[in-house]
Structures are given as structure tokens and as C-alpha cells.
Length: 203
Ligand code: TYD
Image 1 (cartoon, rainbow, N blue to C red):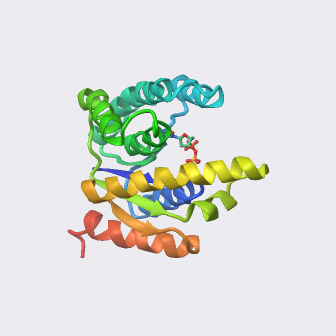
Image 2: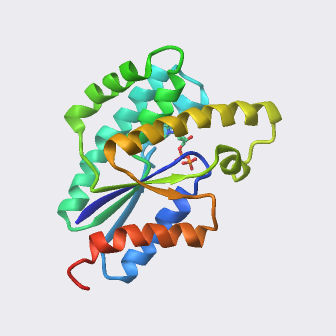
């Protein structure tokens, strides 16, 4: 029984690593529930629509939290049923992305204070958070954006997101894995972190 979260900017390889990890743990006899945020429910769709329509950062943050409030209940149920839950993104995405969106509107401390308040009643702390860290320009190379200016703006934005992730990694004790490498190497590190935590009784 465990709750594992993977975080990282766009193109950091989270989704691929999450799938590899789910297979790896499944092969080793764990019951695995692989999930993601935004979720695949209509709430997740509402979130995607909010992003597409470029709703203001407050609206977006609240949409992410609405989706998460339901997601947390689902995760709790799965943990109680004995699953290892792997979530591709979780609350730290809101801190990092919406914190970055609010840059210039709210001071980061104030944004974080607000997120903390909204999150507190639904709070469910993961056992492990792994931050996959990739250079934003490199990460964007894996994301299809053709427009040069759009790419440049996205890169600047992702630099801010990454900065907030770094702060969170320090204050929350995330494991940080260098994702500027072949996916197999990245996965090796992820497994190296999780194996001692998950299979310690068997060695
Ligand atoms: P997602 O579909 O997971 O994209 P990716 O495959 O790049 O991870 O997430 C969609 C976008 O939503 C992504 O750019 C990150 C962003 N996001 C937030 O801004 N806040 C959040 O709380 C979450 C969960 C995601």
C-alpha cells in the first residue's frame, strides 16, 4: 500500500515512466492503480476546457482542485483496497503551474498560502514524490509546438514552473531524477529509489 506521485514539466517523461513503473511493479506482484491529473472524468475535461479557453489562473486553480477533490477520494479507496497508486501529476502541479501563472499577479508566498488553504480539507500526502527534471528547451523538443514565439514563451513559463518545483523539492523532500537522459537510465534511477522503499522485507 503506497501512494507514489510523479511530477515534472511538460516533456519530462512522466507519463512514460509512470507506465513503465506500473508494469514493473505489476510484474513483481503488486496490485497497481495508475492514474493521472487532470483526470479522465468530466471534471478533468472541464479542467482541459479551462486551459484551452485560457481562463484566469484563479479559475484554473479551482478547476484543478475540484478535479482533485474527487480524485483524492478515488485514490483513498484504491489504497484501502490494497493498491499501489501511481499518479502522473498531483497537487504539486498546481503549486508549480498555477503559481507560475500567477507570477506578477500574486507573490509566490501568497499563492502558496492560498493553495495550502484550498488543499488542506482534501489533503492526502503521497508516500513518495519523484520529480523528473528536464531542461525546459529539451522537454519542449518532445512536445509539438510549431510556432517559434509560442515555444519561446512556453519555455520561459516552464522555467518558472521548474523553479517552483525546485523549491517544493527542497521543502517537501522530493526525490529528484535527472530526466535529460535516455528513458531507460531515468527509469533505472526511479526503480533505484523505489525498490528499497517497497521491497525492503524481501531482501
Ligand atoms: P497533462 O495532460 O498531464 O500534460 P502532460 O502530458 O504535459 O503532463 O496536463 C495538462 C497540462 O495541465 C500540463 O501542461 C500541466 C497542467 N497542469 C496544471 O497547470 N496544474 C495542475 O494542477 C495539473 C495537474 C496540470
